[in-house]
Image (cartoon, rainbow, N blue to C red; front, side, top):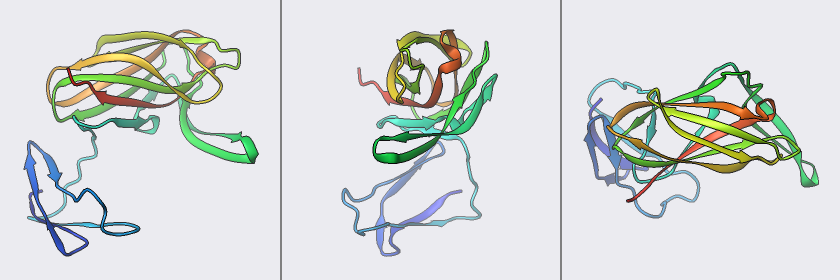
Length: 193
């Protein structure tokens, strides 16, 4: 749906451009409201929602597991207690079977090289898990780390995305203490070469 105009809090006109299905709105560097600013869009017609995940070519994108399709594992709410009795919960992928996969489909605005990190936890005995990641069906990364009992980010490596558009990232635990692994999110950061 084409955008006719964009306003901040119904007053200040904002500059914007639209290209190849991506809408970019220029916003002020500091928010004008103490709580929540609202961007109002005036459209040429009815709203059409594109539910695909988008990867910004200039910023880090964190993609939680609830946006992945899971095969041979489950995505469930997990809870734990931290110091001073504070309870935390989040959705995680767990109960991995042999050959299990998590697959994210994401829309990339620009081709390029992206750094991939994985947020997960492992067994209490600091066992390792070897992860394989393929991009569009081609194996791209193999890495293993000893994981702790707390969620932490672990680097997997760099992948090349050769064209704009939808790309599929499939993660598979291949070796190690697979049953103890719990995956929370994937982080995608553009690499400026």
